[in-house]
Image (cartoon, rainbow, N blue to C red; front, side, top):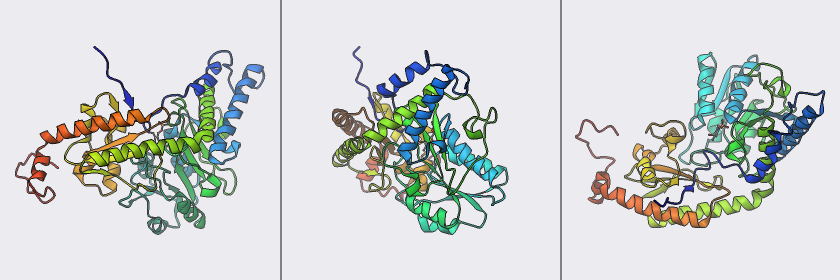
Length: 410
Ligand SMILES: Cc1ncc(COP(=O)(O)O)c(C=O)c1O
């Protein structure tokens, strides 16, 4: 049997390792295998030198100082340190954290953990466009507020928050500002100084680097912020993150950053062209398809679209050779609807009907055209089978329709 071609439009979940990144990493598994903390011999020095270089490469892409870069196992760990470590360390300043309902689970669950430990957390709403409203942020601040944590760009919708304004508010009130920039690094320019970011999380495997390596940026001056460690041990990474450094992974994330920084101007244009081609193709050829979230304030590779009357999961099952994701897929295997779209005021039906398309460095225009064609067919077929669609065609208003079937749960 001939296998159908496979298309990967799920780059917000993870990206393939760029061959240039892999090439840079390989020697650090074999001939340059040293422990970066072994400071008595050449094996250790080689490893330490590679880590130093990676620290510069990572710092450069976010406009930071190299000595403010802490290597971790990924953005989940960085988020945990930023929230738990900062609230714990600065408990004499207060006990209040402000974050947002649409954050990644690494933030939301760390925040819930802190609540269990007696801290106070405000989970802010977002507007219909998915963005935090700065005035509401200012209203949520109390004399007890220690940290504001707002992601740069949302993983499901790609929507970018008003980061610079949030940075200004944090500075005005003398509060630390953490930003989970996992989905934004490499896709939009980031300058932690200009944006007033004090702590920042990022991950290797979203930027064509390896899985299992990430970064926490923690500013050492103006203001100095030194979160307590979550993992204790040998005191690596200025005591913020103990454990023998993952040298090949660190070389990987460093090289990935260097490539992203260099190629960002052309790659972001390439991605937004592909994204627009996909989005326009879908909206022109499929009726009642709606883009979720701000189309203006968005990273260039992401489009989240609801296809009314059908479930996102059904579309995915119909197009098994195309990798996209539905809102819930990144955190669970259940059919629960996306909490991100829910917080944006999306109806249940439209939240269940959503798909996330996230493009990447290795996608092409031909793939985009193929996906549009497949979607047109899949949506047509599914709507033909959908009783909701049939009712809507007959002019029945589904929002005010009184369901008689007691089993109907929507
Ligand atoms: C916004 C955001 N934060 C954190 C993470 C977690 O990153 P990692 O897989 O490196 O732990 C992800 C990835 O799913 C993400 O999209």
